[in-house]
Image (cartoon, rainbow, N blue to C red; front, side, top):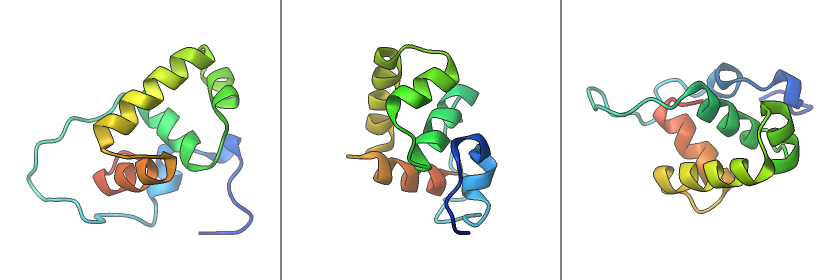
Length: 94
């Protein structure tokens, strides 16, 4: 990872996972693929953006973003944003 960390405008699903190719992924497993919006939420969370900034950038209300974030964390089995980022990268989502 390069320093300084990425800014929100540099965050993308592919930029976060560039160095994490095939990181613990099971071959042949059928896993649902997240929507573009879900990938964007996860990528922006992974670079440390606050909920309000993510919601503004994606054109949704902060309340909607919080609900979507909670759903994603639950689906990933993550207790926090960091764990969600690790699991999303492991699954190849970001």
